[in-house]
Length: 548
Image (tube, rainbow, N blue to C red):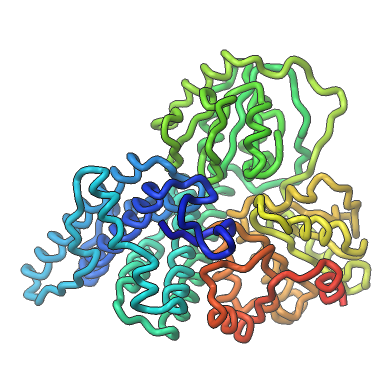
């Protein structure tokens, strides 16, 4: 195997024996083949679209294939193999539809080759062996590491975009432009001799389309559950039976809340689900009692101690420990071999497991809480006061410290930076990186909390919208604002967010704690020279540059 799509890449270069995430060589190979098969489906879908032929099933299959291969989503080789066969069946249907359209319109059909015509094995072991055709290392031998690095940066951007698009689709928000681009980009990745210039352009195009996806997701979330409002979220236990919900999917949480009404079971959020408490249509459920634990990488200890059942809604799962393997459940695209899977959002198994578990024996009398709910609607609602504070010199700078958390050493940088910034600075945050500092006391500034939790990584649109609105209010560009961006990254959703920021022309973004393994020195030179991208340094030097 060879995989360097996440920040955990072994030795900073790539996982070759087993994934640091827990991915086996078989699962890694099948995931590579799933992406390769999705490229084949997109090759025919692009050509069929040029003749006016589309099929929503092709669109969803490609989106879900990409999301399935995001880090910490699906570790089950059997389910990945089944998805490959489904994608290939749809690919063949797309090919037939294209050829029929050519015949009907008197067109000479194209013959794209490569993934478009791969005859896949129909037995899992043989399919795994066949996955060598999708090898990253083989492409490196033929194209060189710079070209392949740019190809993979685009691929990972597409994976992140697909994850966000899937969340939006679940809540009824879709855009054919997004589906068309997914096909277009995957078809482009089949080019046997791409240029650096073309790859850079496609990466920027990915960032552009991802902005539309983020807008769709924001509209989906706020349309279904209302605009987030400032909300205090309890972080200490309440007596009673309990279910812990982790991941990102708000629809899963809503349905679980509905199915547990009147059962006496309390629902807690975990990880990236913390911002769910800020949505009025979710917070209205009285048995959504609080948040438990920190970021995803702490789940081995936290899940083992949680006295109820656990539901994993999207990416973030780690190999379940024996202490809770019989009471953790996956749903949606998430899967782990031997772990119970929730089908059709029927959470009965998780509910039964919660009722059988001990639950919390007592309510912690020393109640603690954190604040969430500072989305763009809330922040822009007080924009005049914020602008006045900036003009008066009371508020000197905004610093966005956002992104993913992880287990790799060096992430204490984000804690020290956030807590060390001067009192005339407002810290914006989103993503699970906030768990490094969100329980610290930041105080207030100009009537606002100095720490504003803008939501999940999915809510990057809020930060972008606030930045653009402030730039308009001050009559300047975003790069001229008293705003600094410091991003922690872990997986592919961070890649598409970064591409969107680069597409917008936002410069001098700091990224850490380490740089992506797929970004070669030549790629980094382009990112540094063209976009001003900066690796995080020492806290002291970076803070001096930010506040200076």
